Image 1 (cartoon, rainbow, N blue to C red):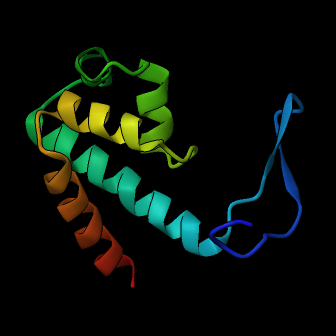
Image 2 (image 1 turned 30 degrees about the horizontal axis):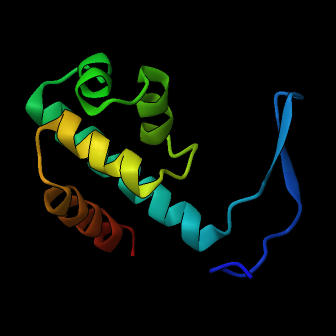
Length: 103
C-alpha cells in the first residue's frame, strides 16, 4: 500500500529507465523542497560541490534535488541540511514557507 494515490502510468527518462509518474501533490512538495534547498544554498553562497562534500551525498544528487527530479530519503535530507550548514528544522521551515507560497 502506498502513502499516496496511484498515479497514471509511467514516464520515460531518456529511454534508459522507466519510473513511476509522481502524483501532482507530491510534485508540488518536491518543487517546494527544491526551492528551499536552492534558496538556502544561495543565501549561504555555497556550491553544489561543497554541499555534497560536507553532506556526504553526490553533487549530481544535490542538482537532482534542486530540480525536483528525485524524492530524497530522510538520511539524504539530514546530509543536505548538514552540507547547507543549517539544522534540518530550518530546512523544513523554509520548505513550509515555499509550500505556502505555492498555494
